[in-house]
Length: 159
Image 1 (cartoon, rainbow, N blue to C red):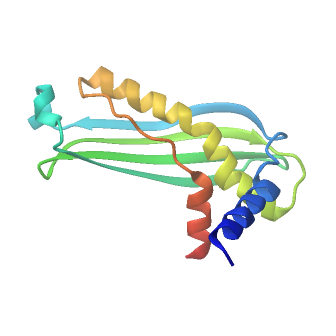
Image 2: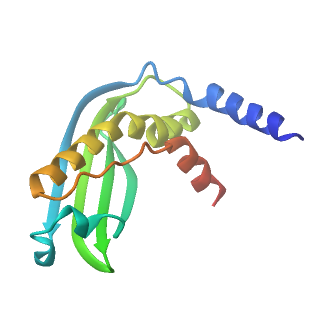
């Protein structure tokens, strides 16, 4: 099978399984828990202190909890840590939640909506909050790239 055919098959799979999000309704979203700790050694700095010396570690876990027949609370648990020269500069931990209303769909499709579509809808707000926290803390802003939740879902399915 050619790589072009494989890419086409993956695209078809994506279209068939994940573009049914038009009936998902985001009813509410909020920060459930947040903690930011800036280490004393990095209370004062210059821009040169950070350039090319910072290692960031971003982890996001996805959890969900059924609220009633059609409503599910989806939580993104974020852990962001920055190290400079192997010393921790800051740690940010946040749980960001969205309350979603779902149409009647199969369990298989609901799982994909919960693990791909809902996080995709919430993630831009998390990025904005992290950016604002960095600015308010006096740290340099962090450019967090988009996350492909579909690829993460496929990877976790293989494992």
